[in-house]
Amino acid sequence: MFKIKKAVITGGSSGIGKELVNLLLQDGCEVFSLSRTVHPRESFNNKGTLHQIACDITDEQSLNDAFSQIGELTDSFDVLFSNAGFGISGPISDTPKEQVVRMFDVHVFAAMDTVRKSIPFLARSKGRIILTSSIAAVVSLPYQSFYSAVKSSLNMLALALNTELKHDGIRAVAIMPGDTATGFTASREKVTCDTPHVSARYHRSIARMEHDEQMGVSAVSVARKMLRIARKSSPKPLYGIGFFYRLVLVLFKILPVRLTNWATGLLYG
Image 1 (cartoon, rainbow, N blue to C red):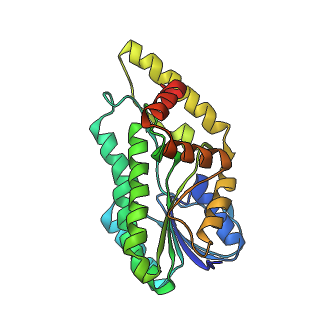
Image 2: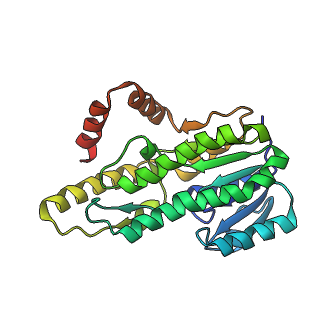
């Protein structure tokens, strides 16, 4: 089993990220949490050592400063959990380009920058890169197309990193949770759609998705499974979480694309 003593987490102030922070602290780990929001220490588990670093990971200088602070305290850590993210929903035709660019900035480009800055630290510990992806990376969701696109990008990034960094002893893994009950649902940015027949389908689809999310598993349950994967001695590059979603991933591999696309449209189209 791979031992985690020190970890860096982006997006550790809420949802799955905060639960990862708490579970690692519970195990006595030293945790560096990078987030725009800094909470009082008492809002986290009182064990372990927590360094909260105020950081906007999309801002190069802010990220540089954060890693400078980490470098002053340690020359290595065992795991990077790249977890920061947000959601937008809307028809492709109505979603402003600025929102799409920001989505890629946070989920893809900032994740890449964080990974690059982590590699020297991880090479010393032969550590892990854990990217929080989503089942939406494989099941392309209508009216959440850009979310599916960025999560699919993370899957491809994990596969490439796993090959590129294996000679340094670093493993990269993209983990795909399904419906999870967090504040992510309430904070999703919804695009306004003025076309009546499109708007009706869009709002019906998003209402169904949000209901499924709120009926989903808890963030702490997902975080526990992510930690279990991170601690594997020889992890695979891609994981689904939960039996149902692992089954979905298998079906999407073996069934014709036309059939799986039709089934997705039947549920959410």
